[in-house]
Each structure stands twice: as structure tokens, then as C-alpha cells.
Image 1 (tube, rainbow, N blue to C red):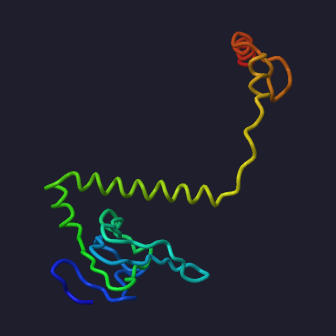
Image 2 (image 1 turned 90 degrees about the vertical axis):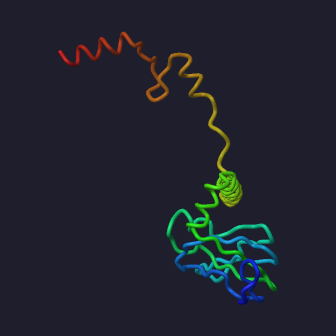
Image 3 (image 1 turned 45 degrees about the vertical axis):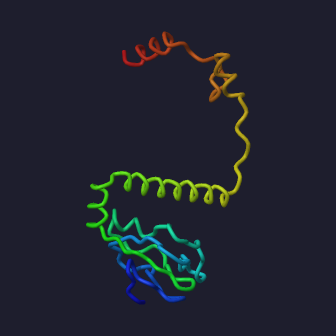
Length: 162
């Protein structure tokens, strides 16, 4: 890793962050490509590729948890590190930064939700409206008999308490 005018330059295969390490800053990819990998019980799984302009590690700005993935350079890459104090100061100067970060995180949540939905087995079609029709007809679908009116229920309740 070498120091640059802005950020740090990482050589091909060099790790920027490692899964399981404590996080306290976020990163902006300034140039090059980065690979995001997650260690699972059956080996490493590639989660994605990041290019110039992408951010990562932003969760550690909000919560001091361990890194959820490993990020390493694919070829030479320049990456800017932003700590929490710097981020908060910049947000005070330009609140749109916070909005843009929330927008990015929202997009990621939507993408993950779609991926989870695609992985889940399809459910059976919606239930028939027979229960709704019984309800409208005044039938109690649990017991198959005519449903009591509110007055009948109150009267029965009054007898039970007497």
C-alpha cells in the first residue's frame, strides 16, 4: 500500500478490510476495482465488485460492529478512508451527503430484499374467498353455523355473568 495525493493505493490482491475486523470508518473507491468477498462455512463467496465512486464500510459509521465482508483490490486501486468524525463534520457542512448515503443504503436494502425473495420457495396461491363469502352471508366459518348478532352476543354474555 502506498500513500497517494488522496487516499491510499492498494496493489492487486491487497486487502482494504477483512471480514471480522473491527470497523470505525467508511471508504470511497476513487479509482480501480475492488472485490467484496464473504467467508462462509463452505468457502469464500463473491458478493460483488466495486468501481470508482462506490462506497463501502458505511455501517461502521453508525455502529461499531465487525466488518461483514473482506474487500480487496482487483488490480491497482485508490481508496479514500473517511472516519466518523470527518463524516459528521462534512454532513454538517453539506446535509445532502447524509441523504445520498441513506439513498445508497436504501438501494442496497431493496436489492437484498429482491435477492432474498428470489431465493425463497414460491408460496401457494392466495386462499379462496370462501371464508369471505361465508362471513358476508352471516355464517361462522369456524363452526359452520349462523353467526350471532352483537345483541345476541351481549345477551349471552350477560347470562354467563349472572
